[in-house]
Every structure is written in structure tokens, then in C-alpha cells.
Amino acid sequence: MEEQTTKATDQVVMVQSESGGQSAHSSESTESTAGQTAGEQTARKPMLYRHPSDKVIGGVCGGLAELVGWDPALVRILWVVATLATGGGGILAYLALWSLLPSAR
Image 1 (tube, rainbow, N blue to C red):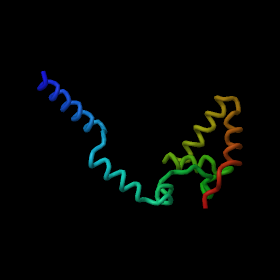
Image 2 (tube, rainbow, N blue to C red):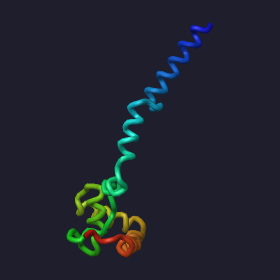
Image 3 (cartoon, rainbow, N blue to C red):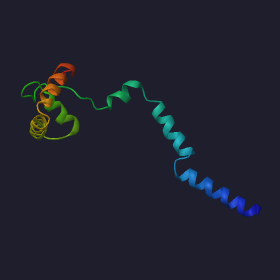
């Protein structure tokens, strides 16, 4: 009976270590990310902004296209379709984003 309990415990420990339990490898990766400065971590974070050169009206669609990696013309077409589908809601959303989003420098 004691041997079965030991085997079951070993299996549980093995499953925990495979599924993300604390191990020496995971603590090393935690230490390496803890050593980064706040500026390095925020520099990698993608940000939505108004595109300064790829704009038709305010640059909102150009900035959104750059954020998601799409063609700006596709984003503009989808925006028009969404505006028509919502009965003009896209215009209000565009105006709100135009006034709230910072321009890229």
C-alpha cells in the first residue's frame, strides 16, 4: 500500500513540474525578466496612436493598421462598413479616437 502511495505521489509531482509548477528553469526566466528596467518592458508594448503621415482625415485608421499589421486601406474599408452597419456609430468612434489618441512623433 505504501509503495502505491509513493508511486502516485511521484506521478503527481511529475505532472505538476510538466504543467508549469515551480522548477529551476522557470525561476531562472523569472529572474531574467526581473532584471529588466521598466523602460525596456514598456518599449516592447505596442501602442495605438494617430499615424502622422499615413492619414486621410486624422490618422486613426493608419495608426490602427500599423498596430495590427494590416494595410491601411483595408482598415479604412472595414471602418466604413462598420460605420454603415452601426448607423453612424463609426463616425462617433473615429471622432473620439481622433481627440483621445496621441499623435506619433
